[in-house]
Length: 283
Image (cartoon, rainbow, N blue to C red; front, side, top):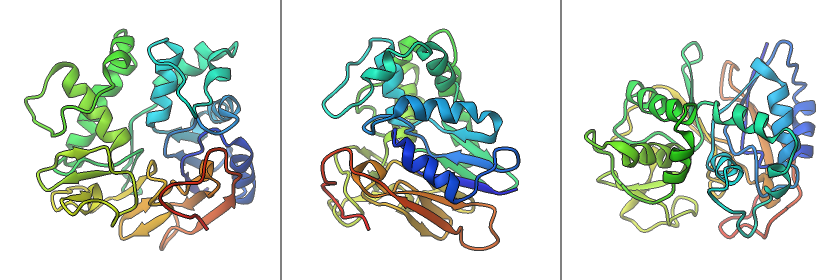
């Protein structure tokens, strides 16, 4: 048995299938973790969703911001934007079944045996692992409940930018989603910044990547995340970044998490489906 984690697929089904073949993934014995953003911008979001769903308990995926966008589009809360490729999937005959399955995916996956946390964007500085799971659970309960449409309507917006334990209502729920699915940078006071999307070093000095913030409390656990294509594939200490820019013409990357030492990497090249990445050249 092996445990593999794969970065953001974003509808690039052929590289995804090629990568699974390359790592010799066996759904009968292996486990597959996906960092979210299964859909959008690539050409085959529908096939990607169907494949991951068909793997059943052999695969676990956390929700990413593009997955949430698909849910909002199918509920007619948002429209396809320029560069989105979700129109076909929203008309599929099994869309209700697929989106019901998707909205029941977790925002955080925590494996106590491997001591690994997987999340799409990151872990908010100041949150302990217990708090992370508690707050993610709050959001998951709403997404999986009767009020999920109201949540989808109210999840868009940049504020609040800083966590406060007294936050309540939809502001609290919006902050939790923004942190787990959109965060890259924050300032020393833990105020989020959504404008900066380039790699570390490109941002104004007052901002730091969430994983470099001195208040990060989950550092003793390995944290696996995606979302940050301009950061690319990267391992440092207990951190593993897995969005290696597949949809931009970069690579799709898998790492074996249950290996004894540094997680070994396997990658496949991908065709670019959107314009050249503005922040980095992938190799």
